[in-house]
Image 1: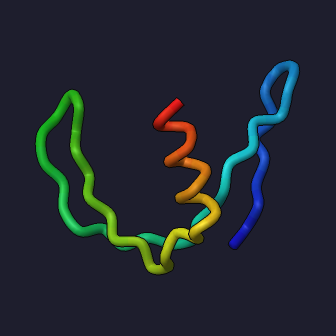
Image 2: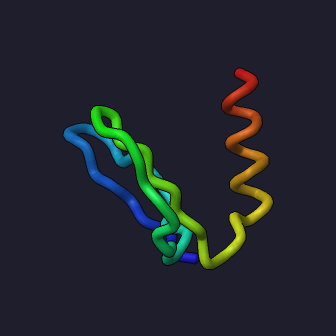
Length: 56
């Protein structure tokens, strides 16, 4: 897994590069929905962080 950082004007915004994906399907427009299949599983520690952030 790659640890990447996107730099904004005053701070770094961390994000994780989770690897390659394969196109599955797409439909609609404005907004368009795209379904991707990840080639690797999302690591547990990222899922834990995402769940904590979703709860508040």
